[in-house]
Structures are given as C-alpha cells and as structure tokens.
Image 1 (cartoon, helix red, strand yellow):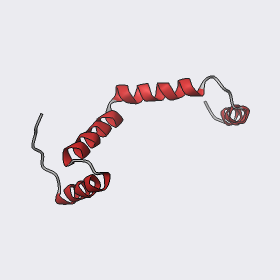
Image 2 (cartoon, one colour; image 1 turned 90 degrees about the horizontal axis):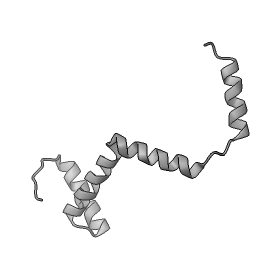
Image 3 (tube, one colour; image 1 turned 135 degrees about the horizontal axis):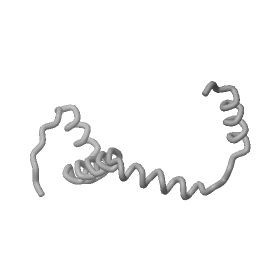
Image 4 (cartoon, helix red, strand yellow; image 1 turned 30 degrees about the vertical axis):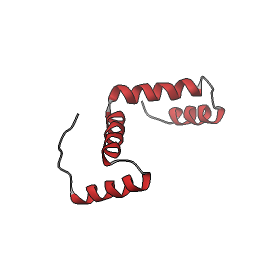
Length: 78
C-alpha cells in the first residue's frame, strides 16, 4: 500500500543516510521504523515480551534480593 506522510526535513535526511548505510530502500527503512514503533507501543506486545522474559528467567530466587527486599519492607511504614 502506498501512502503519503509529512515529516520534518531533518528526520527525512537522517532516514536517507540510514537507508544508504544499511543499503535498504527508503520504503524499507520507514516500514521497519513504523513496525518497531508499533511493537514498542502496543500494550499487548509489551506484555507478551515481558511474559517471555519471565519464562526465560524461570523461578530462580536471588538470596540477596530476597534479603534486601525483606529488610526494606520491615522498615517501611504500611
């Protein structure tokens, strides 16, 4: 699909330099940038990414973190 957008000249020039450096078309650079932006700002995608990290980390407990957390909570006013 083709579309027209207005962007500041500085951003356009930066995108042009990046496209040349990556040896990609301008359209490919804009497509990748927009896809990245959408992924970073889609709440469901962010949650899924965080869930994947949690699965990779597993149920390991860090004794130092547990101990430090306990001390902080003991000295916190509830």
